[in-house]
Each structure stands twice: as structure tokens, then as C-alpha cells.
Length: 190
Ligand code: AMP
Image (cartoon, rainbow, N blue to C red):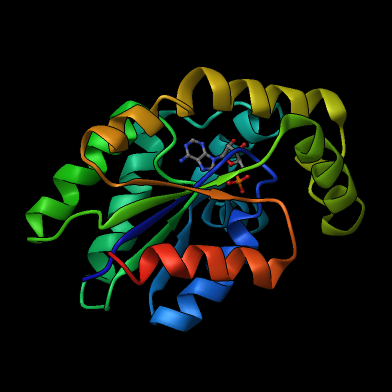
């Protein structure tokens, strides 16, 4: 199995690139943000809970996120591989993911990190907010909090995957196709 973590701050382009990569390598794409948004739209118990955090730009608690992710992975374990988009976002999530994949005799092949400066991120998110209708993309205070959450809880995962020799940084600024080709150069060598 080829299991890729697509990593980077909010607005780095993970969702856009995940769509391209999943087609190219026939991977199953899991975006925890998308699963939460689906649950919010359908007014499920999980959605009501997650919304309280997402509306502020805070991370949803680890156990809630891990349980949801594990459920999706277990239900789809017979696929070629997974592309994780927006997960893991904390050290406990990364540890839980390792444990989960080990249970199925597989592991993370690589973390591909999209590197983009904060200034560009804020502008991209505000632009996306105009069309996506996402409340958390439309307010610069919420955006700044999401970026703060990223630096305080998520950015440390770079070291976590570097220690396993599977961290690969990619320049996330440029045309969509150009960035896809940088990512595929990494994945082809995994
Ligand atoms: P995203 O679509 O990845 O930008 O995520 C949107 C929001 O969903 C985040 O700001 C968090 O509130 C929540 N979320 C998504 N993935 C996670 C995760 N792995 N851990 C905790 N919260 C998450």
C-alpha cells in the first residue's frame, strides 16, 4: 500500500493537490475537514460537536477525530492506499495513525509537506472564502487562529516524520500543475 500524508498549513493547497494525486495513484482520499463538514451539513451528533470548534478555527478534540478517521480507514482497508489530507494534526493523532496502520500491516510511505509563507496563506484563504462559503475562510481572525493552531500543535509533526526519514518538503507556491509535478516526483520515489 502507498499511504501518503499531505501536510501543510491551512490554505497550502492540500485539498486541490489531494484530488490530483488520488487520481494519479488510485488512492483513497480522506479529508478530515470534509468529513466534519459533511456531518455538519447533515446535522449529525458528530457535526454538532465539531462545529463548535471549527467555527472558532480551533482543532476538534483528538479522540473525536481519531475515532472518526479510524472508522473510515477500517471500512476502506482493501484500497491501494490512502491519501490523508488534514490528518494527522497533532502528535497523538500521528501516533494513533501509526498504530492503526500497523494493525493492518502497513505504514505511512511518506509525508509530503506543502511549504507556503503565511502572508500568501491568509490571502488565499480569504479569496477561497468568497467562493467556498466556508465560515472559517471568511474571517481573518478565524484564519489567524487556524494558522496559530497549526504552528502550536501541528508543525511539530515535521520532526515526527523527519525522525522516520519520511518527511519531504515541496514548494507550495506556483501553478497547480507545477506543484502536482513536484509532489509526484517525491511520490514516485517512495
Ligand atoms: P480543513 O478542511 O483541513 O482546513 O479543516 C477545517 C477544520 O476542521 C479545522 O480548522 C479543524 O477545526 C477541523 N479539523 C480538520 N481536520 C482535523 C484534525 N485532524 N484534527 C482536529 N481538527 C480537525
